[in-house]
Length: 285
Image (cartoon, rainbow, N blue to C red; front, side, top):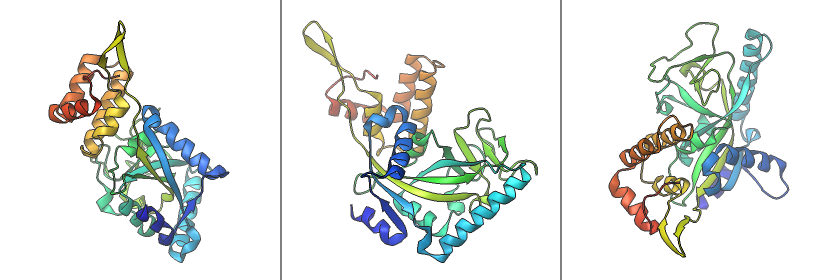
């Protein structure tokens, strides 16, 4: 946990769990947004951006507040500030808290060129962008975002700025946004990092299916499968797995097609390894 403990010296405050309403609000919001992965997710620590630790951080917060007022004036009084999640390595998140975002963070251009953050209730999507560190931990950042007036940005778009002066930021879906896109000109004025949440995956017991008195087949729970392959697949592959599962849950694809997608994304060699670890058969739940 040395890497976690050093965060305090990097301008972040450790929020203790005991009788701390702020800790519980951030933790519960994160776990709720993890959806079906919530039961295999343990929050290990939460650190808060200590704005008072440097004049630079105070200036960045002051800039954020000024831009909030400017967008509010433009949008009739409401800057539409939302919370959103950003997942990456701990070193990357520490650098963002200290120095801000830069163009190396434009790692996912699925909906335009800019910084993609995930809506407050979709922390699971940010978790898909993480990789396990040497302590077995993963890390996501909770930010305040000046959303302003949004416009829909289609998948595959190369848009890198508002399409007109009437818009401020982009979303993947106007009616139910999962992803917020902050354009390059606004990445360090419209985003303020507030917390870093450190977590790890655990496993639930895979259920057994009984025929008569003896178990015949051991099922692999999909959350367990996701947790077991998460450090062997790239973040984009994890996002594809999540997207396919959502389509299956929404009954937009059949179970057969979903299982085919899972096999295609993960690959049979890794699937066989996971099945072997589970001592069962590939029966996804």
